[in-house]
Image 1 (cartoon, rainbow, N blue to C red):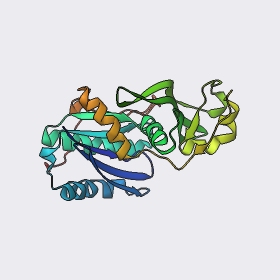
Image 2: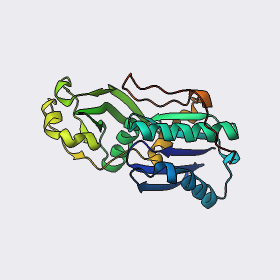
Image 3: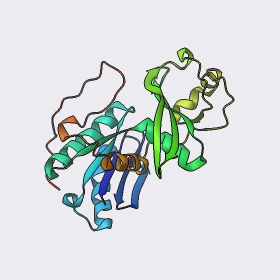
Image 4: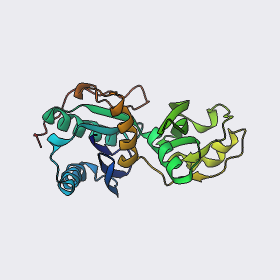
Length: 235
């Protein structure tokens, strides 16, 4: 039994979710450049709806990336502040894995090539196989996460379906596949509901980190992040 708070601000969407012993609550909004203004209020409102305080949460999860540099910094900073103040463990979750899980839940297909538009003619991408094992959903990495120009991606033999904004390069990505692609959903983006589902599996396995290790994953090596909780008061 657990209560997990999850957030994601890695793309123009902003979302918060609560998993309360399997009962799910979520606030999901398309809010470009509004994350910093909205995220704490969204968290407060969801906790109020659930009649919970932050001290009653068992862990905080967040979309660690890849994604927008600013968005990832906001999520990591908010989570560091809240987890530090309430003395909670943190569960960083891949945004690309969460997108693959949403594709699986929506379309019941196993192989997913998750992509996000990384600008500068590049995409963040990773390949995943989502399946059921012993009553649990498992997301296995088939193609490691990377930032890459679509036209230099190696040929892919798995029968992938596609999710994410990086499929704006659909023709190029399809040309890299040896199997026909069944469909693409460019509208799927990282969201807290699926961040939370993956986090629940990690929580059950006790795969959590301390607040000081709640770090974003940028994939671009030149981006750095300081391990320092922001000055956010206890909630």
